[in-house]
Each structure stands twice: as C-alpha cells, then as structure tokens.
Image (cartoon, rainbow, N blue to C red; front, side, top):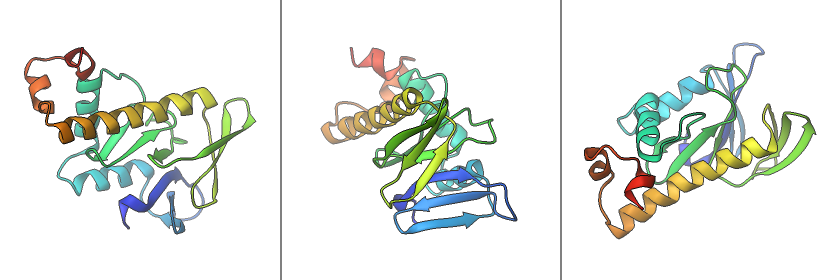
Length: 165
C-alpha cells in the first residue's frame, strides 16, 4: 500500500478487519488497527510512531493529539481524538470537506468521494488540520532554505516556535 495515496485510516469493528484505509483508489480493509498501521508506515523511514510524536512535541510544543510525520516534510496524519480512544481515526494531509452530523460528530468527504464519520467537532478537526499543515510547511521551509537543522534547535532545548522568534 502506497502511503502517499492514503487519505484516512479509521477503526473497523466488524469481522476480521480492524481498520479501513481510505485511499485515492477507494477503501481497503486491514487486519491491523489504525495505530499499528501508522507504526508500520513510520518504520518504513526508520522511526517509530512514538519517536515521531516526541520529535513534534519537542520541536513545536504541542501537548495533545499530536500529528504524526510519517515521512518528514512530505506525509503526515493527525488523530481525530486521543490515540488511546478506540474510535480514533487518522486523517492525512489531503483536503477534505466537513459536515456536522450531530454535536461532536462530523462527516468528512474525502478526495476520493468517500464519506467518513468521525467523533470530533468542526473546531477540533480544523485545529488538528492546521497543526499538521503548520508542521509540514515549517519542515519544508527549513529544509528548502537550509536555515538550520531541526537538530540545532534540539541542541539548545528549545521548541521550534521559540527558536524561530
């Protein structure tokens, strides 16, 4: 499965499948949970989900529902709820449209035309999407402009937002 074609990963509780992966080509049922899939994708670039999460937390100062950089500067996903919640979905960096179904529950229309219902408010989804886009854009900018490495900011134990002031 090509990670760059993934739009979202949602838990699935029927039969042997534990998740549904929404891609640009349609839906695929998987035996792994969403968290296990994210872990596998991170390992392809020689890191773990927890390592990526800690790096973003350290550099950007985010504390909760931390977006995951699956391929740094290129591909990322954000959790819709706490990653400990069994209903947690991961939404990738692609555009999507939102429509409120009921309080605390949104329907997302993905690029492939599929609809995915998530337990999150419009505000929360918007904030999570902004966080992910901010991380991806900052990473691309720093790497393109060679303004310094991310390691540099870690050496002085500062978050990226403090470093850029």
